[in-house]
Amino acid sequence: MRYYQHFALKYYRFLYVFRVFIALSLIQILIRLFDVPYGTWALITAVTVMGTIPFIGGVLSKAKQRIWGTVIGAGLGLSLYLIPTQWNWLHHVMFIGITLVAMYFTQKKYAYAALVVAITIVVVAGGGPEDFDAALWRTVNVLWAGIVAILCSIYVFPSRATDHFFDLVSQFLAKSGNFYHQHNQTLAMGMFTPLETQELLKLLDQQQELLPHALKEAGPNKQVITNTLLIEKRMYTMIDTLVSTSWDTQQGQEKISDMPCLTQAKEQLARRFARLSRQITRKAITPIHKNEIVILHLLPHRAPHDQDDTSDISYFGYLWLNRELARQFSTLSQTLCKLFRYQEQ
Image (cartoon, rainbow, N blue to C red):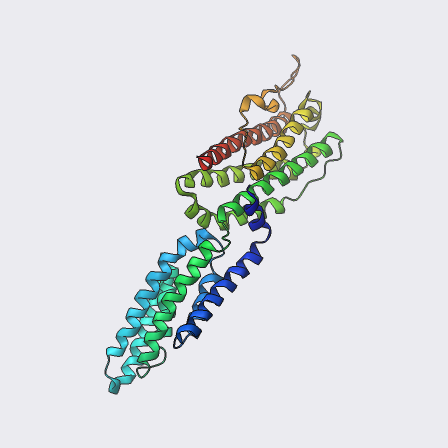
């Protein structure tokens, strides 16, 4: 990763606060310089807009809904001022009615836009029919301050969701390799202790939350990013089963322990986890093909006189889990290589 990406990942909270500071300062300067009436609404808009958009992807996914929500809400709110002032009770009734309709649509597809519509209606028309001048200025202030906040989010030390996403992928691989190594060591010493993998699950949950924003930034790589998370989830299933099952109590435990070169092959895979994690940080991926992974070429050792018994179930099940983990790892490395190759072009 380039220096700024490391910097942005490490200090993303500080940079977020700095972006808010720049936006509020610019808005405050413009308010004072041009003596903008009801300037407080501009400041409120900036805080609201930037409080929900920490990433560029968030800006791209929400900006259109914000703009249209503000325009529609302002239009509906200002239309209430067409009602004659002697019928001010109708203004309040209609105000509540259209606000409730907007809130109803917050449970639909464009929930965020509907929420902005409702908020804008309240801002514009909440003061009653005698407050038309204030309503007009509030509308203008909401629009221009929203644009300032969006531009600051994009151009002032921006944080990219994709950078955070792949930092989490790197962490997931590093921790997965550690869990796999611990499993191999304890099983080899005959003192197997089940491990909890909540750390891995938490990393996957964080990636899932970032995924919509990352996809907005991904351009032609959307499917590749989606596939990356899907492969990680499959790998998590294999790792969690391997490290949480009490293999030392299974009937096939002796066969697992006696299989030649199995421990060495698993350790090779664990080291490759760590290496791929470092390569993601450098954005220089070397794809791992299946023929390079030793565990995929190991064959179960069966003497001629061996008979099938119940111990084979756990024995071959254990081998399948390790082999499937290796296959998914190979697929992930090739997927990531494709992604970073596209980014270089």
